[in-house]
Image (cartoon, rainbow, N blue to C red; front, side):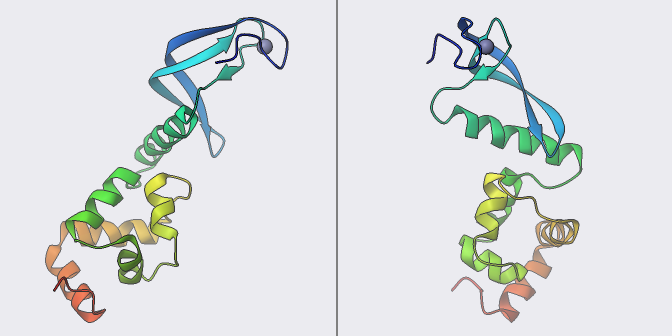
Length: 139
Ligand SMILES: [Zn+2]
């Protein structure tokens, strides 16, 4: 952890609490985060991969605010259907590496994909039929 701010030279203090994260220009608060803050300019520093963890939580929060399924919910649906990410992409007609990006929160699904996933989640018989049609039925 840095103890001198590389931006202003002020002293940096380790803390535990809420940080604010920008998601598509919107400010999202994420609580319970280990971080360090410059007492002079207020710049926040994270250790290791904490920033990607904060990003994921912020994106989940943002999606909830906008009524989109979170990465965790998408993963849970895919696992419930017993599909790999590649097979789930085939089921949805999505491009390669799309689902991993949705699940990690690096890319957001659009409203159409979100609706389709909700239908698959809430109507298992539809999911079943579609998987059969696409040759994705678990054998
Ligand atoms: Zn500073």
